[in-house]
Image 1 (cartoon, rainbow, N blue to C red):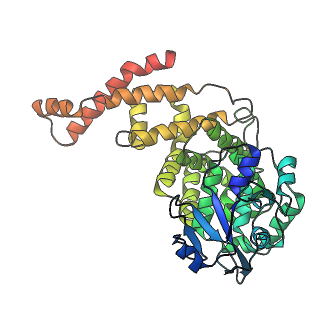
Image 2 (image 1 turned 90 degrees about the horizontal axis):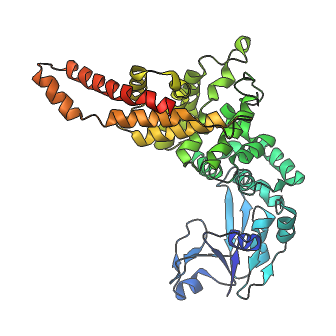
Image 3 (image 1 turned 135 degrees about the vertical axis):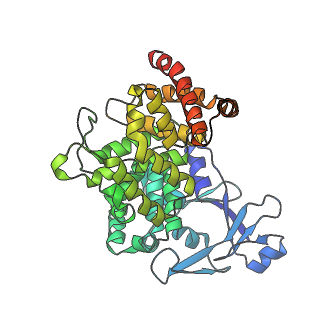
Length: 412
């Protein structure tokens, strides 16, 4: 029984990057031998075991055979006769198909180390085409390693897979898992770029793909192309260190611009409402988590108002807070402000401009939420007010609190 460190941990060591979980492959063993050595079986599709002390995952070396379309259409084979090279040959990219033995000796049958040096993402072999998830993984790695190029033959293979309908068989949960991870990488725009280059974006996210080539007013958007703007917004979201719900909101905030009537371009009147309508089916199709979907809907609907809020008076600001449910969900409203800042600064030449709307809205909301609703209600009752009149009294108190600070926040 021989044990090898494989995959990402080896790649990251060679790159001098911190590594997360370590994956191990065991060659020359059987499930019975692993159990006798104290390893705990946990794999469902193929034999994977937890180390009795470290609880790291150890998988038996395996091969796989394609038996049907999509992600689940595989039969796996393990046994003492399966070699390390057999196991590495089924992996996606050469940079992920390296191993190290107990002495640290590198096993690199597919040229992964050379591709690391050349900064190239290249598939290992024909087996890449058997698993459509690998297109998503390729795009995610392009987002992580922003200075790596995709080998032309790998991109061509991805295009052939898309044309063969392989990506149409992907299960929604796996698409969302890879999409979410890609949005959190160092340059999320590259994930969109690679998916678009191979045709997968049009199959998986047609609402996003349709944004490319749609013009916007150059005075507001010097980059002009709505798709280019989207990618700049995503990269700004990474620059500002935002969380996943914010990044998904950035991805979906302008979907309605793809359906703007041609006769009013490059203006996009009413695109906010159209964005919300397109977002619903997209989120349902990919089974997007509720937290991400709700924030994206809020940002799609209100980002124009949040941008314009510098000119709002106290009453308009309080109505904006009402629509955003900022009283009950201030943390979500904060994330909406972050998404709007990404939108405002994700434009050519706007990258380092301030976004004063956010600070003004934070100040105004803090003042309004500091109003003692209990005291206001008690006073209203003492004045003989009842029912909706008490709510109106609270609203007026909030408006007064905002009016006392909003002008200061603007000038400051």
